[in-house]
Length: 282
Image (tube, rainbow, N blue to C red; front, top):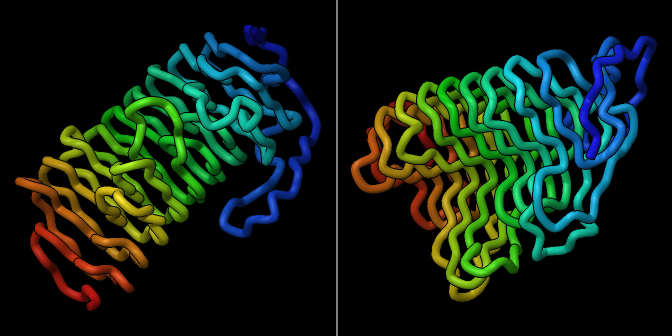
């Protein structure tokens, strides 16, 4: 395991081209501490970065774990990969319970969960998170920001009981999820497919200007929803576009909130629950 020792890196760092227009790839952080091997633990505050693609075949644990508050991890366009572990993996790509942690600008691919941040003030920005078998991005603390990410091809876990596919999971209050693209969700057995899921603790959160599409819904699966508020309060859904899902926007049970300016295309139930504002289509 690499335990990070502070050693600044100077000079330009050039990431590999992703070939995906949604994710901005540029050498953004040039004065940082390098993460050069997996697994790695970051246990001091500061700015960290990747300087090359990193991969692991571990079927459990965390590829990168952040245990210190006030950490920024810039992947600089590089990849953290776990594909070699296969679909029975329970490993996590980037994991932290600390506060004020930012993960940005790169790829996390092939884990059970891609990026999991449970502390307050978490930020996940400009990431491609793909081919993870259960969840793409999960934030659980208050005041999280999830923006400009592409979450693709989530689901397919063969772990017992892990049948749902979550693109983005939000568990903390006063969070903001904006300008993300989620597509290609695949439940297992009778599981569910949720593009953006707001759990009970995500009250007073906003979901704005996201694009969610294409739940696979294999035979026998539960249902799919583009944006789902699950037993939570005062969730605003504004300007989102959902296509090819069973539900477009779904306020489940006693969930509350106002939705406006959203578009649902080829959804059996475009809008369910909540309070309709202006400009929703159809």
